[in-house]
Amino acid sequence: MKLQPIGHVESPLTDRASAPKQGDEGAPESWLVFAPEYARAMRELTAGQEVLVLTWLDRADRSVLAVHPRGDTTRQGTGVFSTRSPDRPNPIGLHRVRIHAVDGLKVLVADLEALDGTPVVDVKPVLGSER
Image (cartoon, rainbow, N blue to C red; front, top):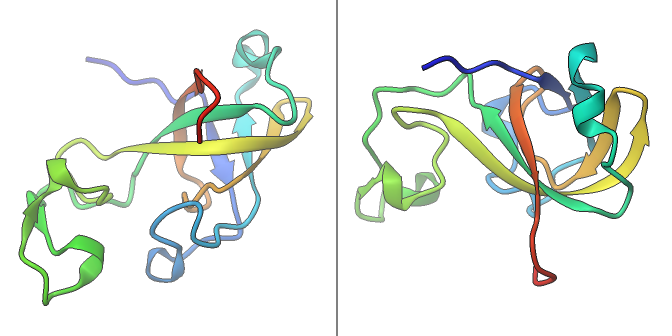
């Protein structure tokens, strides 16, 4: 299996401990910066559109199989496949974001809790109108 990053995140979030756990919990606007060879793939992305961004959570601990949800040790340990923990065997991040602007190879998005420098591996449209 070969996974090819298509770009990276530019964000003011640099410290995992202070980053929101979910994008709708106060994540700042961030840029998705695409590699030039993917310019055609992003051409139809437009402001106002909702997309799913898949990232590779490169600072995750891939040995973790269970966590206390939201870091609350009073809660029972839960298998990572039943949580949104970034620590997991294959640390793929899934983020539902809204595009605010497109500027060349950069896309400004809201509600992205990924850290600065996080590799972007794919972008897909949100289908349907519910949020």
